View 1 (cartoon, rainbow, N blue to C red):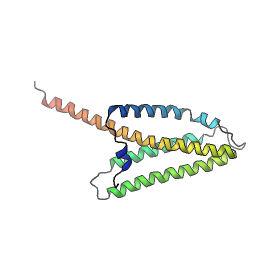
View 2: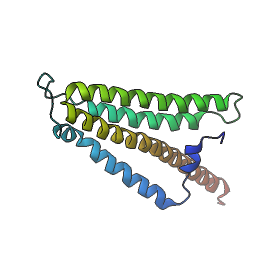
View 3: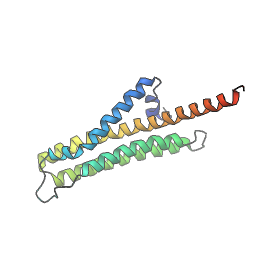
View 4: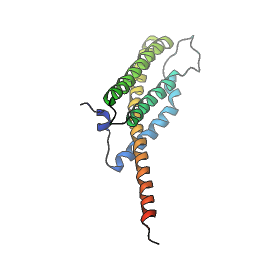
Amino acid sequence: MNSFIILEFLAFTEWYHYAILFLWLIILFFGFRYMSDFEKCFTVEANVPKNTVISKNLVAASFLIGLLMVISAWLIPAQSVNYQYYINIIKYGSFGIIIILIIYNFIVSLKSHKKNSGIAHGILLSLIMLIYFFSGMFSGLLIAATFALALIIYALIKLYKTLKIK
């Protein structure tokens, strides 16, 4: 229980898991491109400018927070005296920032949209933000796995050149 549980849960061993993960990130990329169409589905108050798309920024921020959470936890030396302390700071800090972003999302949604539309917008965008947050964590693991694979390939090439008989 003291270890970073989400990293243990997301530790894939088969190559097709990474392929599915990569396809999921491509799907999320195209979903992010059409986030402005998500805003058009809800009725906006009269005093809000037409080109205001706050949802795209919130979704991008939640994705980056998930990505930075995993990468920063990955870069902490495990033999450090304060390892568990740093992991808890990263974990609870990231979840705290996401909760603050979700609260900010509800405030902006209720101010910029009509009542029923604002509530629906806040709930749907919060779910999308959570999906992108956890997908950011997945992409952090994908980056770590790609880096590890590149390091192994580099070491094998160097070993092959070292052991090559002329």
